[in-house]
Amino acid sequence: MEIKRYLKTIITTVVLTLTALMAFTTAEAQTTNRPKIGLALGGGGAKGAAEIGVLKVIEECGIPIDYIAGTSIGSIVGGLYAVGYRSADLDHLFRSQEWLSLLTDRKSDLKNVPLSEEDGVTYIFGFPVSRKKRKEGERPMIGMLNGDQIVTVLDSMMHRSGYIQFDTLPIPFRCVAVDISGPEEVVLKEGELAKAMRASMAIPGAFKAVEWGDKSLVDGGMMNNLPVDVVRAMGADIVIAIDLSNEQHESRDFSLKDLVGIGGILDWAVSRPDWKKHNDNRADADVLITPNLEGYDVMSFSLESISDMIARGERAARQVKPQLMKLKQ
Picture (cartoon, rainbow, N blue to C red):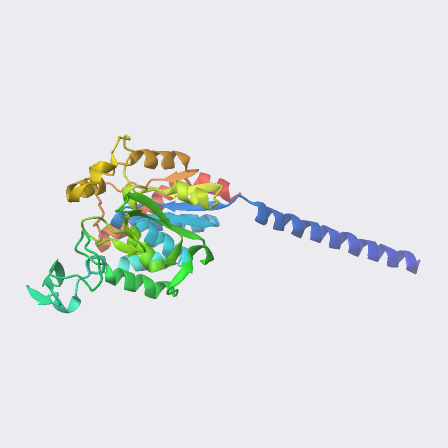
């Protein structure tokens, strides 16, 4: 009798152990074999605040992000998210930062001085308006603003200085820029992270191009303002895309020769002629989120504007929450 009871106990233990192992193996396989989810963050200057609202809802849904690609302000939001910052951190950053001073390299100690000159740079109330000389070894480039302050701030936030592979970040990351000397699209996947993000947002005519080896890099939005194709190439099976433009535009032809001269570059930057890729990327997104940002532009950096755009992004994401929950399931 005792032997039977003993054997029964052993058999029960073995069955329970095997059941637990099978459940663990199945769960592990589901985690390992699940579709990889990519996040494509579009450009749009201050309108990038809306992307924070979207990220809040994505986090709320518990959706894991495996890859991130961003353009312009999307590279700033995406790069910070890739290193570990979350929507609450980005919300605080956007609301607390003096963006105008940060982006324009304004000297705070001169903000009450009508006119001054330091190191060959003329300032009006602290804003640099002309530069007599370039830094030693610097190539001549179109654009007044160096963007030194934003690189310094981003670098301090990254806790990763010097050359790195962007695949080694907590979430693998890419950002899009354009080599103006080509011109050609450049997808940055290694190097100095803060410098790469600065290159992706270098609006031609406003910011100096970033020297990257033998390339002169400017805002990636000139050729790819919604990098769905980039995050697909990283390995994403499913892509969530956040498009900050208010509407889909009709594609039109634009010859590379139209880029010749300052006028051509500005026309490219303002009119965003490469709508075919933009439209193709919109169509290729599995979940496309387009916050209504009517009334705002790339320089709407006031606290009131940023707060409203974050709320609009969150509202737009909640409208597609059923789609997001399907991804979670």
